[in-house]
Image 1 (tube, rainbow, N blue to C red):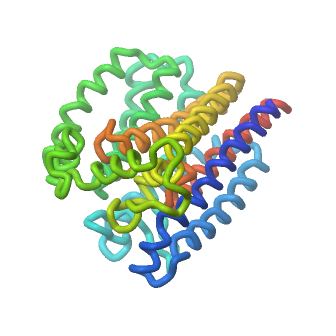
Image 2 (image 1 turned 30 degrees about the vertical axis):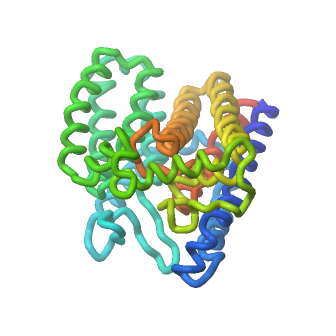
Length: 362
């Protein structure tokens, strides 16, 4: 699978390079006006990129199968961090959300660590319980409790988007492992009214739904972000207005360098740049799926499946939000959006995927 490893590494490198260019382009003016340094965000991004590169090579140099003995400790560590971040004075609050630990200039988001931890735990569980996965008490209920507990802690931050993403990843892994559709269908049936309640219970979530349904009805109010995103994408035309020439990043489009960076890509690089970005993600998912299919070790197979599902789902949701196909979720575009914790753990996940492929060749 050497060619697959080269292909995946090359695609991820292209996405990271695109991210470096677009983060600097989309955040420079904002950083200069609000923070006094045009390079504030790109500088921090490069620091996290360096950390992610070191951790990726470390992960690639080990045998991923050793992670099985760390599955439970990593899951326990995730629970502890997700609980601690909710404590005032321990976790850092921003815009009403308490999602980060702040260590000097570095911020760490434990929910990103939890995504990787629960994938490792679920892969180990499914590998151990292959003959019992169809049983409710032995194969379904334990994972449901673990997944539900993690999602509950993340919802308390509040971060509904990451909770839904984690639940979706575990759902896919369980489905592929052979969990009965009756159990999974019952889980979905219980989740729908809960999601409706969570949306109705928070005014800002209701505003997002209203904005999604018709952003132009109140384009200066609740629909401002989505309407500005669509303006950015439409303004680019086929070839774009030119790198660095975006108008929407000039304090029109909020979160231009994070959640809505694709809109700036569409404005500056046009339809061609947007299509190339989407194609790169499609190619990454396809090649990742090929590695998964060729993996014979059950733990490696389920772990690779989880990694590919995570990156694929997050890319689809972010792109969907940018074009107005989904309500705003607050999930970054993998490898491209600004966000230190997400970048590091996405790179580590790719390192694990490459490691799985390498061990299969031995």
